[in-house]
Each structure stands twice: as C-alpha cells, then as structure tokens.
Length: 276
Image 1: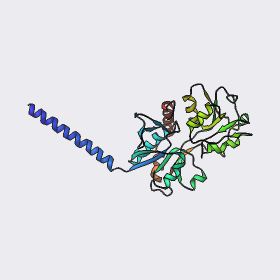
Image 2 (image 1 turned 60 degrees about the vertical axis):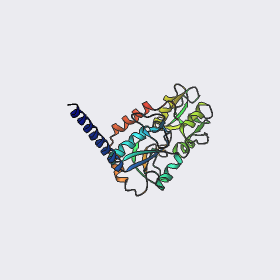
Image 3 (image 1 turned 135 degrees about the vertical axis):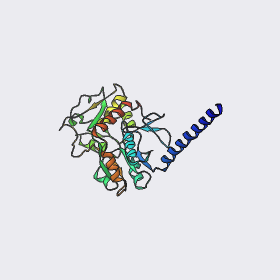
Image 4 (image 1 turned 180 degrees about the vertical axis):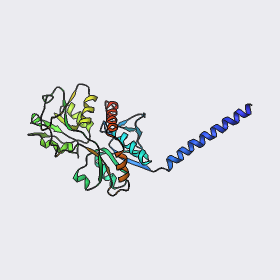
C-alpha cells in the first residue's frame, strides 16, 4: 500500500511538472508585445518597488503600474501575446517605435498632426479636460478663468501640449518646461512656479498624493483653455503601416467605456503618494 501511494505521488508530481512545463512552453511560444511608457506619470503609469497583483516587472528593475498598464494588459491578452513594459524617457518613445525597440506607445500620448508625421495612432482610449494645479494657500487657489492667472508663473511638461497651451494665459510668465510631473510638483511646492498644467486625472492624482498642500483649478466652458487648440484625449502610438494596427484597434474597441472609467478610478485609488 505504501509503495502504491508513493507511486501515485510520483505520478502526480510528474503530471504536475508536465502541465507546468506545457504552460511555460505555450507562453514561450507566444510573441512579446513591447509597450513603451515613462512609468512616471500617475495615474496613467508609475514605478513600484515591489510586485503586487496589478503591476508588471520591468527589465530595468522595479515594476510599473497604472491605467496605461491595465490597458496594455487587455491589448496583449486580446492579441494572445506576452506583455513587456519598457520604461523610457518621454522624448525617446517615438524614436523607439521607429527603431523597432518597442511595438506600441501607451503613455498618455495625444494624437497630434506633428506626431502623425512620424507614427500612427489608434482611436483615443481616454479623454479628459485641461486643468491647473496650484498651491492651496496661493492667490490662485480660487481662480475660475485663465484671466485670473495673468502674471502667474506656470510650467508644463516638456515636449507636450501641456507646455504649449500655457501661452493661452494672458500676460503669463511661461516657465521652462520640465521632464516629468514629479519635478513639476516639486517646483510648485517649493514656490518656483505658481501653477502646473495637467489633464484632470493627473491633476487629481497629484493633489490627492500631497494632502492639503495642493488644489486643482478646473474651468467652466469658455473660461479655460481653447479646446480647439488643446486635445486632451490620449491614443496608442504605433509604427506606420504596422501589421498590428487593425488588431490593436479592435482590441481597444472591445474595452467598454464603463470598463475604462473603472480602470482609471482603480488606478487613481492605488497610485503611490510619492512617485519614484
């Protein structure tokens, strides 16, 4: 009887091992979808030090999480591909697509005519409004229009619409653009600038992460930035004439608006208080 039990145990271990190996073989046979993002633009994407149920490992160390990661997971799943998130600087994203270092850009990037000269874009996967983050104790905390920011020093992220739209503010002191939002928020908190432009979820996330120190100025129609010049929707970037384009577009279309809203809500609720 003891020999029979031993044999059954050995057989179970062998079968389990075979099953595990089979699963590993299936995963290894699948192609990898390489998705580029900053991992420094919460709640769209950020870096974690430790693994959890929602983030993915980075080859450079650490983990990446956020709304963009959730979207990337769904796209990879629909394409039956393994997901690899590649962390890189904002200015390197388009170059990396064209040098075949990554397959997609899912990084809160807006489709613009200039960018379309280099890459293609899918339909938008998220849309929001343009806001300004200010210190809660500043004279701009109760602003309701762009005119209220006349004379203010405002900064935006380098190489984005959030920098170029600043000139819509009358008599603005357009501060030098910065590489990422942690630097922008640091400049705001230290008093180097009076405000930082941001789309709604990014603004809300940074306000929530800094307690009562910051507040978000949102504008009514006609009192904020010109929507004809400011498109705050974001799309997936992909190489021109890519064979993946139609499949990615279809995969994106399969994610309902309700699912997208919930994914953003979940990402905003778990983003870290301080990005790395």
